[in-house]
Length: 456
Ligand code: ADP
Ligand code: ASP
Ligand code: MG
Image (cartoon, rainbow, N blue to C red; front, side, top):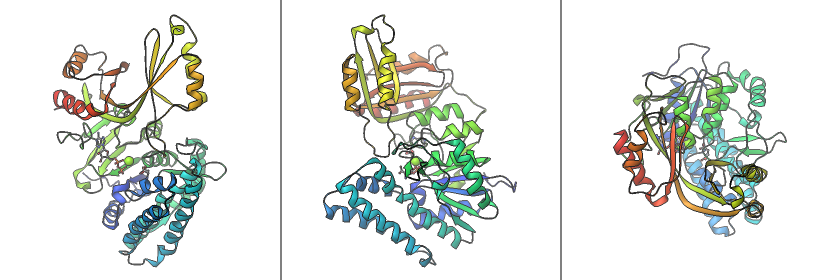
């Protein structure tokens, strides 16, 4: 299948993830994909594989200067290895070295006083570095390329670590700053990072480059968004969990959104929001094997199977709030959610009984780790009810069509999982998904068992 669009005005935004820009070989393969598609004039890339993790570690504050130096050396190696393969290394060497120096200074600051704004500033260097290398590689392949700082257009609020983009502002800024560059060259820019109205660097949360690419596609009225990664499309479950996972050729926006939301790491949870707003078809393929094709995500598709896929998200925090005041009372839940909102706690799943409510907390912050309730929120909630927090849980989501209105589907699903303890079952709120929590140690075998019974 060819992704080449012969319409000269068609615009494709192509995003390449960390493994697709891991080193010189991976970058060259990805650059070849850009070169063969004249419509691919905006390219957003992630940091080289592993770099964001190193930067997050530095940003969390490392006091041991030997350890800090070790990480800085590793970072230098990753980027210098690519530079050593360039035809004209001198074109990027100074810029790359000065970014690496800046990482070193910021890491020292983080060792004495880590902060979330500092984390974003430090971590943004991964994408700032990789884009220098990737645009040079494209230029050396004979593609007229310009590197662009996405912070000029990717306007967000100031919630560092998980900033909220402002699509209207992004559209206006893209019209002024980005569109004029697209005439006869390829623009290479950074995923994941943005800037607030004061010019501070922000990030969209881990895995946020997919979301960046979708926002840029929306702002530039692109006709296609391509997500190039290390697997040839979206599978019936994470192929790392079971080799029986099958690729999906075509999937609807609604089903794919549920997949992304419920943990299929292949797409950042918010990626499809801009694509759906602007009805932009999304292609997911492997930069290692573009000839294998991949998955198309669009509004309407030819098949709507009852069971489509399984997603798994670990690191879940479950909070159970219990109070007799809840019994037949009104206003209790409103008060709980007022407190959570005040402390910017984002709630994911909810189940209720007469005297208790259980909820899970959402987490995609750049800082990482299992989400926690801020101490002040716990204090306030304790005035209202008993608060219990449990961790070590994973969320399993089954994605499909008309599940809640199809007779016998619940029996088929739960009958298969008799041997496991399932918590917080959410079923019926969406025709496209059913989900529940399981203990972390059971998670993979639950997914494998269910996959085998209903998807193979
Ligand atoms: P990138 O660095 O390109 O953004 P990610 O590691 O974020 O790549 O996402 C790709 C990974 O997503 C795959 O390697 C795979 O293990 C994982 N994944 C999770 N669920 C799925 C799924 N349903 N289909 C395909 N890949 C999945
Ligand atoms: N580099 C960032 C991360 O590792 C963003 C991304 O790759 O999407 O989370
Ligand atoms: Mg990703």
